[in-house]
Image (cartoon, rainbow, N blue to C red; front, side, top):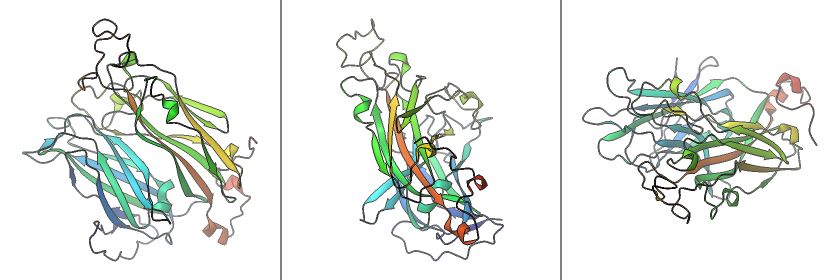
Length: 369
């Protein structure tokens, strides 16, 4: 059984939310409803979400894309998309928090192809931002125009229950929609500076979340879409690295597709949601102190670029100039967040002991400093 909180479009008259479901039922919030995208313009709207006075153990995001009906059709190319909360701060400034990233599939219309795809993402850490009036910005980087494009529906499922610890603060460390990669005149280090974050005294756990995807091709190592390079997060000088690579694109459930959908890529697959890379920073967490965080990428130089005086088209590289048709500038779309959590005060009121870390398994027993 679904219980929905009604959609409230931006600038429309707000509708009072109905009573929430009984404890055994999820609460559903329908936001963008069969929303049509055929150009790279972000869509913004404001919606009514459950108040913070209601407890939920999990929040799931259901993101569905469909093809427009004839004479329309899907955009047949893989396009980057993301969903961000636009949160108004106490000083009335607005902070965007990315909570989901997807890449649309190649052609999924025709015999044997799915025609629509749905992804389910866990966005529980953003619950403290998803309450009452919430403004969302949804984006798909399609330039197809006309009657082709995507029909998008976004629903949030709030699962009743409670958790021993909950996120209470998220810090945007880096938000880089186009981080140029491999140009010595524009090094990534200039844009990925270390960040120092003050930590509240009641913080009990911390996670660095990186949402990174590589784009561009026809370059040295076929970067950055098809280059398998390491990325690293540093917490208080301790480095954790991983290969930014998806090796399972051929097993994508949003398939079969047209085009090269089965080729593995740097952090993403056509027709799939992007899985964030989480690094546990709790062992270095000292409540009431600070955390110093940094992000690094494997050194790389793109020799097939127009600013390389040694590049000769057809000799050292097939093409030294970006032509947006097989040779595009390598770059990353990168968002880094620090997620801070504290104990749920409602559980303390019911007799939960703050020192009982084994009951929820988040706080590390041994800190590194």
